[in-house]
Length: 384
Image (tube, rainbow, N blue to C red; front, side, top):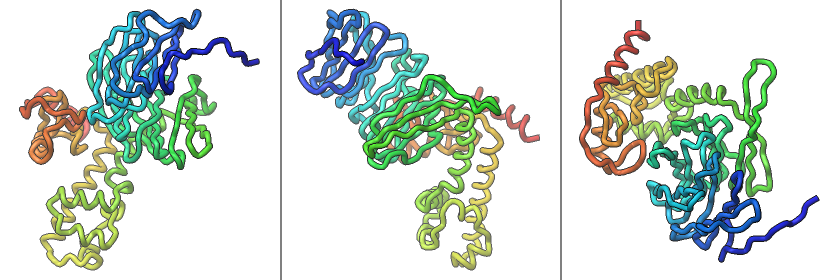
């Protein structure tokens, strides 16, 4: 039996989203406001409506405890509110300034994701109200987001139909086309399932799209971690497109060979299989010195692949080069990088953080001696 018990008609324009806590109902609207109602009798709270956003509010969600409400808007901000008194706790601006379409708390309330129309996704620290990590999808607006029940990873869905899995460090673990005409929503089941044999736990994920389909997925964090390592390796092999190879050639001061490699359709997998014979006979590179340089760079690339498979701790790897750091320095964003890599980054690009996309307060780089000693100790242990 279904029975209508109450109708709320306080918003002045389309209502975009609603969310429950254990005692409240929240709604948000194109009228730029968020409204809070008591579940006891559906009366609006004295401090409602909540007003700050200058454009439409697209999404609202409660923290698991129900004490904090998040709202996000076309104005490019995600706002945190105290649900008890309506006080605004923080205004978090999307680094790109793009309209924010979706927001979601982690199960422990320590993090909040915000996804924007330009494909950027931000992981916010809800204790400090500061940006923790930032990433982006290739195409489309982010319109859906869901955390796994254990908080180990989260999923985003885009208007182009891509479903992307991220870990809590904002590393992309998996991405694939899920719905042809775009994703509209996704969510995890709160109850894990077991395979019954190896005792592994899986999470069920549902995604729905504008293709009139609902798809059910099985997601295993254990398998995703293994896939993550494979994906890191594939960054240097199978997953490299011809354009990726061209970018790599330019980074190795071999841009004069870009045309030859494109003409021969050399992708990442074929790159690692090149030999001195194929460089001379197939690619027709006449210069012996140039062939030697290419082979030397390819060998360095093979070494990187091997190093990734050896399980290097992520904190020892430079976020820019994805290689083990030799001379780590701390930038003004608080993250550590290989000195040469961050110097090149700052000199060749706008002075923004590679990790957060925010402007670096300063170009000063401080040697991270503690990290360098830790890396050296790790090397002594693992390279005997």
